[in-house]
Amino acid sequence: MPEQRVVEPEYLILEAPRERKFITGSQAFAEAVKRANVDVAIAYPITPQSETMHLVGDLYAQGYVKDYYRAEEEYGAMSAIAGAVRGGARAFTATSGPGLLRGLEAIVSWPGHRIPAVLGIMTRVVNAPLSIQPDNVEIAYLLHSGLVVLHAENQQDVFDFTLAGFVISEKVDVYLPVVVATEGFFVTHAKGYVDLPPEDMKLPPRDPYKAPVPPTDCEIPPARIQRDAPVQKSNFMSYLIHAVWQQEVWSANRRAAKWIKHYLGGLIEVVNPDAEVFIVASGCAAAQGREAQRYATMEGLNVGLVKIKSLRPFPTNELREVLKNAKAVIVPEHNIVGWLAKEVKAAIPNSGIVVDGPRVYGGMTLPVELIMDEIYKAFGIKKEKKTVV
Amino acid sequence: MAEKNPIQPGPEGYIPTPASFQGCDLPPPGKALLYGEIVDEETAMREAAKALLTRKNPTIFPGPLVLWGWNADAMEKAKAVLELAMEIPNCRIIPMPDYRPKYPKIDPEAEINPNHPNLTILHNRIEVCIFVGVHCHYANLSLRMIRAGTNCYTIALCGEMGHEDAMVSLRDVHADEIRRFRDVLVEVRKEMGIEWEPKLPPENPSLPKEEWVKVSPLDFGEYAYLLIPRRGEIVEESE
Image 1 (cartoon, rainbow over the protein chains, first blue to last red):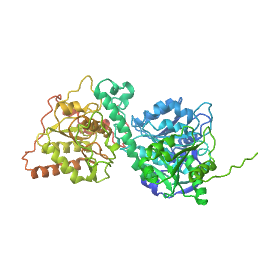
Image 2: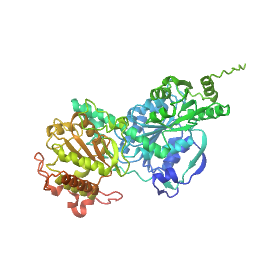
Image 3: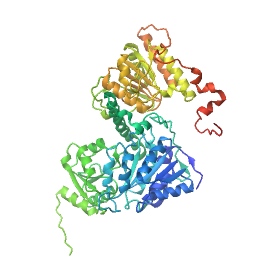
Image 4: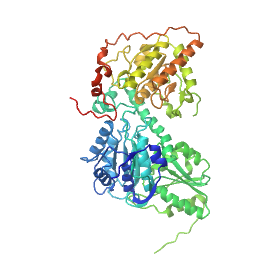
C-alpha cells in the first residue's frame, strides 16, 4: 500500500490527473473506496453476490480501510453501519437483490437518523423464482425513503459516483446516505475503461462534528428515537415533529442536487438537446440508449438521449426543460414495473408522449434493436420483420 | 421560485410547506436569505435588526453549540451572543439546552424544545426570535413548526450553510459575524431613534442557580483536555 496523502475533495474528484485502467464495476467500487479514507466497511457478502465487498475486504488487509467485518446477515450489517456512522465513522457497504430487501428496514431508517454513508447496490432479480441475473426492480423500493439514489451507467460512473457520494453524503445541508446503484453482472462483472486519480491520494477524514445533528449521544434523537420512539407518543406536537422531521429529510434530499451538479456535472446528461424524439434512461439502459441514439443518428433520425444520473433527487425541472418540445419519449428499462417511466410521466406536463418501454427483466439483456423499434414507431416508420426459421 | 418572498411570518397553517419544497435554495458563501430570497448579508442583517427592534418580546434561543463550552470558539461565540443580547431592547434569552422531548410538560419560561417549540413561543408571546448554536436539523424542525403555528419572525444565525425556513438566515456565523450583526443592529437602532442603554437580559427565573465552576472546561486548567480531547489529540492516560 502506498503512503496516501489527504487532498481536498475538489482536487481529487475534479482536478487530479487520471490514468486509464480496464477494470470491472466491482473493482471500480473498490478503487473509489480505496481513495475515500473509509473508516469501516461492514458486509454480508453471500454467494452469488458480486465480488465488491470481497475486494473491499482486501483493501482492509492492505490497510486502506481501517476496519472491516462480516455481519451476521444484512439486517445486522445495515444496523451496524448506522451505529458506526452515528459514532463518527465514514462507512461503506454493498448489497444486492434479496440481501437488499432483507436489510431494507434498517436502510430506510438511515435518512431519518441522518446517517451519511455510501451503499453500493449491484441490482439483481428479487422476485421468485430467484435468479442471479440483473434486473433493477429493487431500485423502486429505495425511491421513497429519503435516500439519495444515483444510478451508474458503467464502470466509470461507479467510480465517480461512489467517490463523490462520500463527499455529498457528508455535506452538512445533506447528511443523508447515498446509494450508488448499478446493474449486477453487466457492470459489476464486466470490464470497462475507468479513468482513475492517483491511488496515493485520499479524501480528508470525516469530521463528525461538522454535522446537522450532534454525534454519539444516545440520550438525544436520532439515537434515542430508535430506543423508545418518544416523538411518536401521542399529542399534537409529537405528530407535527414527525411530519417536519420527514420534511427535513426530503428537504435535505433536494439540497443534494447542487452538490451532484458540482461534483458529477448534473443530475442528467443530454445528448442532442434539439431532438424530436428522446430516449430517457438510467443505469445500463442508458448505455443501450446511447447506442440506439447513435444508430438513429446514422440513419438520419433526430433522436436525443437523456441519461438520468440521479433518481433522488429526481431531475424534474431539468426533464421538463429538455423534453418541452419532444414528440415522443422512449423509456427503456431493466424491470417489469417501469418505475422510471412512471417517474418521467409524473415529471412532465404532457405525459401522453411517454412510451412505456421497451422493458426487459429477469436478467434478460436489452438489445439496441428493441429501442430502435420504438424509435421507428415514434417516427411512423414501418419496418418489415424478418422471420428466421 | 414561483412566489416572491415566500417565507413570511405565519401562522402558515396546519402543516407547513417546507421552504425547499417551494424552491428556496440555501445561499452561497457571503450571501444571506431574506424571506426565502438570496440577498446581500447587509440587507438581511438590517431587516433582521428592524424586526428585533419593532416586534414584541425579542428573544434569543441559544442552542447546545453555544451553551455548552465545547471549545474556545464556542465560548467566544457565547460571549458574542450576550453582547448582541445587550443591544436589543428588552431582549430575553431562553435556552434550547438539548433536543430531548420533555415529558410530561416543558416549562416554557425556562427553555424551548425542538419537539414542541410553539409552547415556548406562544406562552411568552414571542414575536421575533433568534436561533443561534442550534444544530441545523433541529433548527429546521423548530423553524418550520414556528412558521406553521405562530406569527413569530424567525432569524437564524447559522454556523454552517443556513436555513431556508427562517425569515432571515445568515450563514457561516461565528463570534466575529455575530459582533458584526450587533454593530448593524446598533446602527439601525440609532437610525430609528430608539434610546437604549446596553444591559444584560434578565436572569431566567425558572432556571436553577448555576454552579459556574462546573460548567467551563477551562476551569479544569491543565486537566481540561481530559474532558474534551481536541480533534487529532490522543489522550494516552485517563481514568
